[in-house]
Image 1 (cartoon, rainbow, N blue to C red):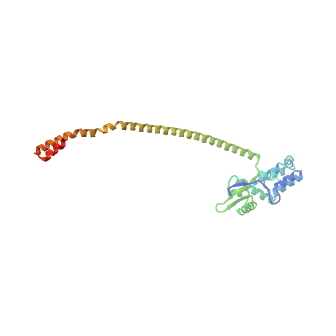
Image 2: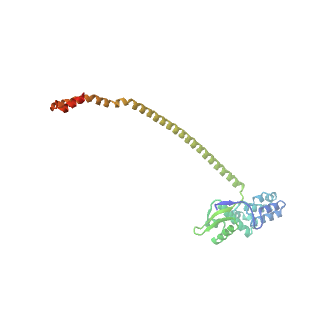
Image 3: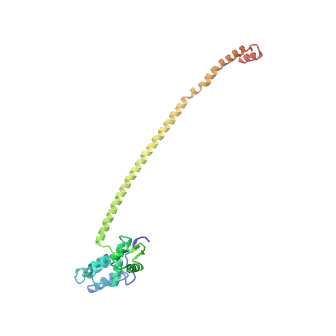
Length: 278
């Protein structure tokens, strides 16, 4: 399968996102805090944006006693394990299941930037001490369908082919819109360039057609000229036969003189010769 994101839907394990959203409609205060903890720990839930948008959950950010849980849900929606390390003092205590999920979601975030992630990067970002621990986390993520890929011990890297989608923050949305705007501008420039090339090609084709027509006209005119020239030269070609005919009597006279000089004037052969001449 090519590197791509899976649909951002929760499922399996301890519940689905839709269940938590329904419960959030009536949850307030401590109940809302407990709902947040259940959602981030649930093995079947990997996106949290819809839950964050619920009014009862959004209210958690306005109270000092509940803000930490709102920040916790925000961390799992958009953040990474590095963000957790930086904010640890202001967040509720995370269970081992929560930490495992956050590390696996962090791998997803890394995959969106680089499909081949070096072990060294993963060990540093996930704050792990050895490759064996890293491999266990990756294998578990593959088993849960969070990612699809393979470990490459020889090249010391993780190659990811497929990953689940994560929530997109407002800042990321703005960056995506800017990227799409740049892409649209480049596409428009490409279209304009192609139109110019098509116009030039059409002009070149038109000029080539006109040139071909001009050449064909010149060839036709040349053929006509050669044909007329050939007809006017025909009488001259018949002159040699007429000259040859005019020279025949002179040659006969010379032959008669030759016969006379050889003593054949009175012979029968001479008489036949002259009789034939007359």
